[in-house]
Every structure is written in structure tokens, then in C-alpha cells.
Length: 542
Image (tube, rainbow, N blue to C red; front, top):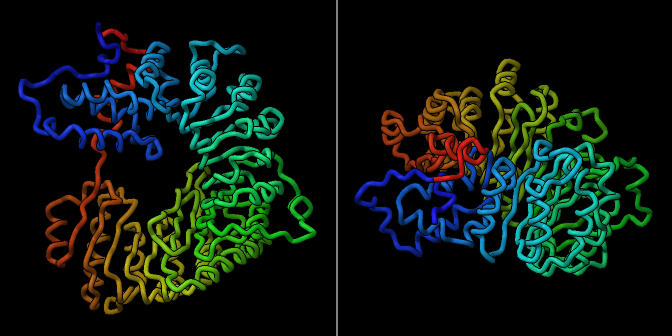
């Protein structure tokens, strides 16, 4: 019988298999399972397409991949499968056997077909997954478009009210226009209160059953900033990560009334080590002020709205107070060492804490382009300065070229003073534009960070960036600095692999960690073929 997925595979094999096909089967299996991780998925590097394309390497890999139920069960990508034929969706689900499922993706309005749910449509496929496979779903991370949710309001309430014995991750989002309605259409008693292994939870309403047995098992929680969150937090005694996302907000209440707590309640979460604020609101700022985390808790802030950074905005006082509080809490520990700051033309993220291993979750680029004013940018730097930055050993900072150009044209006194305060800095993670700005800000004989040993380059996409990096490193060496390592593993810019650049680094006696590249980029020839076939433009027959 012909394999119905063979049309995705290039059948041009050599007589002698490539040497990598002789790798130990257990090792191959571990590599493939690491690849089939949709938590690392993004638009440029689809896990689903990577697995399909890996199966083209040789017949050994093909047989191992196409015959592995647990691997296929890890890559149920709704975004891709929404564009596939119904036969292909069913075939991929059949290949999962009885393995636990990981389901992720977005079902857009283009996936609907009128006012009815067609069983052969992407929406029908999603409903069938929830209805028939609920008992073996391990990870569920979905975003529904308004029109899709409108079709599913009836069935969803019943489907999500059943016990979830294997569910570890549950992230459910509905696009913006439906937020004022979903509160009345989603079940309050999710999973019938029974989800014994649930650890990661994100939901568009905080109206939950406070007696649910799964609340104490949660390690990560993401909810809109609503007063009832405090009642939920009292139950989440093992919580490690807390996120307030203004984009999940259902009802924008007056924070001066809705969040007023006459008892000034404080929720102590001794295991909470990371707090994230996305699209900051006054509600989220006031709520987090009532949470007492672990002393070493990291604070991460991200937004596409800079209004609250304007010094005259009342919220600026709240945000400054919050950062100061977390700074003092961290400084009470002996080894405060990490500050991270991201800013581009549409968003920014700020993170502080004890370790540089947990990086900011990322900032979105959904808004129109804006540039911080000089006063606002200076205010932000001044806010960060509430930390004892003279003791910080790791700084992660990315600032876009437009803002840096503005600062150059208006003088750099404030920013020079800011960077000069990092006297203990050993590791700098920065974009090349920032390295160039630092070079401009300091005198040729003035070391920028005297104790700097490692430079990690991020966000590089320009051919001139190698010159920025080389000039910064050369300046540092000439002023008496002793940088040992240049880490380029966070880059995908091939300019850093040029022989001339590597020779320059060798002349500076630097150890170079080279860039990483996607093995099977989505945009290559075979990737395009796979996309065409999934969209139904190529017949299913081999």
C-alpha cells in the first residue's frame, strides 16, 4: 500500500546512504524528539516542516520518522493543518497511534465555512480532537479567531468541562473583539475541577472554580489583570511564574474602585521566581503590588505602549515604584547579577534578577513604529538605575538604531554616566548597533567596561554589523581591556563566518563561538514544495 505522506518526500536517493544515516538509532531518536518541540516553534522555523524535511535525508531517517507515533503526536500544528486537506489531517492523526498529543496553533477566520461547523473543515478537525482525543491531550495551546469562537461557544463549554487526566499545558486565547463576550460562554468549572498534572495555565478570564483541585499544582499562570486574580493566587501555593497580560483583559474596570482592597491584602508566594507584565495597565501594576514573591524573583516588563513611561504620567510613578521594590528585594540577596533590557521601534522589555539563563520571553512588533523621546528614554534608564548596577555582572540590552541615532545627535551625557556605572560587568549581551553607540560615547583611551570578559552578539541582520563588532572589540583591547570570548551563537548573520572577520578575531586572541543556523529553513526549495502540497495544490497520490 502506498504511503499517503510520501508525496511530501523527495525520492531521489543515492545508492550509498550518507554517513549520518549510520548514527546510532537511539541517538537519532533523541535528536528527532528534541527537534519535535513546538515550544521552540516560530514562523521562520516550523517544527512540522523540519520533521517533514528531515525525513528526506535518507531512507533510514524516513522509516524512523514516518513510523514513530510519539513523534507525530508532538507536532499537531493547527496553523499548518488548517491549510491541509482533511485526508492529510486524518492521516497525521492516525500516525500518532495512542501517544499523548501536543496541539498548538491558530485557527483563523479563513478556517470557517459559513455558520455551520463542517466535520471536514479545520474547525471540525479541532472539535474532533477535543471530543475524541481529550483523554490523551498533554499540551493544548490554541488561539481562536472571533468567528471561530462564535461557532464553538456551545460545544466548547461542554468539551472543556470534562476531567483532563493527562493535560500538562492549557493555553487558550480568543482574539480581541470577543473579550467582552467570552466570560459568559466559557465554563467556570474547567476540567470538572480534575486535572492532576496540569502545570502551565493561561486563560482569558479569571473567573475560575476556586475549589478546583488543580490550582495548587500550577507552576505557571497567565491571566488578565482582574481583582478576582487575588482569590486565585491564594490557591496557587506552588506557583513559580506569574504573568498579567492586558491583552487578555475582559472588562476594563476603574482601577481606583475595582482594585481597592480595604484590608490591603498581601498574597505570599514563596516559590514565585518570575513575574511578567505584558501590555502594562494600572490594574496590573496595582495587582502585582499586592503579591509578595520569593526574594530572588525576576521582574519582566514588555509593552508596545510607551505612555506610562512619560515622566508626567501617573503610571510612571507606579512602574518606578514597582521596579524599585523588586530591585531592593533582589539586592537583599548576596548575588544580584542580572539586568536585561530590550527596546525596538514598537516595543520594549525589561528583566531583572539573579540569573541570565532565563531570557525575556520576547517583545511583539504589532504596533506602528514609534520612537522614545529623549526624556522618556532617560527616564527609563534612570528607573533601571535604582538597582545597585555597580554590582551587576551580566547586562542584556538591545536598542534600535533609530533611538541610538537620536541620542547621538543630542549628546550622550546621561547614557554615558549610566553605562559607566557597570564597573563589575563581566558579560555583555547586545546588538551591534548598541556596541557601535558605546564606541561613539567613550574616548579612545577610556575602557568601557573594565572587567568585561565575554561579549554576546544578538539581533544582527546587517552586513556592516561585523565592522561594529570588530571596532568595539579593538577599542576595548587598545584601552587595556581583556575580553576573552566572542559569542555569536545568538546570531544567524553569515557575515560573521567570513574568513576576514575570523582572522580579525584571531588577531585579538579571542575565542569565537560561531553562529547557529537552521538546518531546514522553511523558505528553501523543499519547504516551499511542502507548503504547496499541504495547501492542496498538489495531489495526495505519490
